[in-house]
Length: 171
Image 1: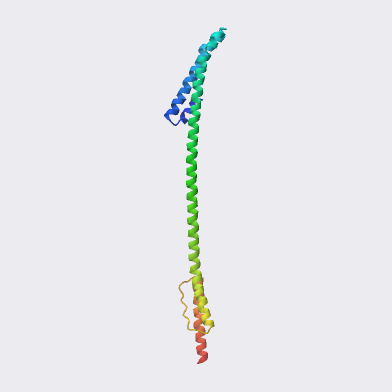
Image 2: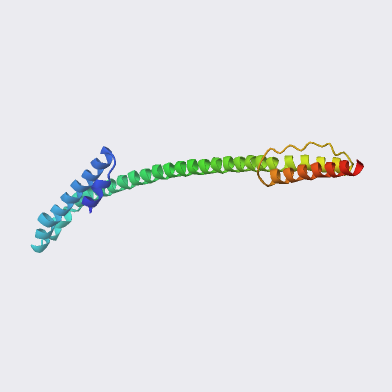
C-alpha cells in the first residue's frame, strides 16, 4: 500500500511520516508473526496478553502517522483547490476582458462602417432637395466606387442632363 503512496509524497516531512508509518507497521507485523502467533500456538495466552501494550504502542504510532499523512493530503488538496480557483478566476477575467474589447471594437467598426454609408447618403439627399427646389447648379462629389458612389455618379449625371435639357428648352 505505502509503495503506491510514496511517489505521491510531496515534502520531506511527508516522506518522514510515511517512513514512520512503514516502520510501525513492519514492527507490528513482525511482532504478530514472530511473537504473538508462536505464543498463541503454544497456548501461552497470558504471555500473549502481556504483548498488548507493545502492540498498542505500534498501532498508535501507525495511526498517528496515518493521521498526519491525511493532514498533509488535505493541505495539498486545499492548496491545489486554491490554485485552480485562482487560475479559473484569471481565465474568467481574461475572457471577460476579451469579450468587452471585442464588443467595443465591434461597436466602433459598426459606427465607422455606417458613417461611411450614411454620411454620403445624407449629403446626396441634401443635394436632391436642392434640385427639387430648382437649384440645378448642385455639385455632387463622387468619392467612392461602391453602390453609394455609383448612385452619386448617376445623380450627378441626371442633374447635368436635366440642366442641359432645361438650357436647350430655354434657348
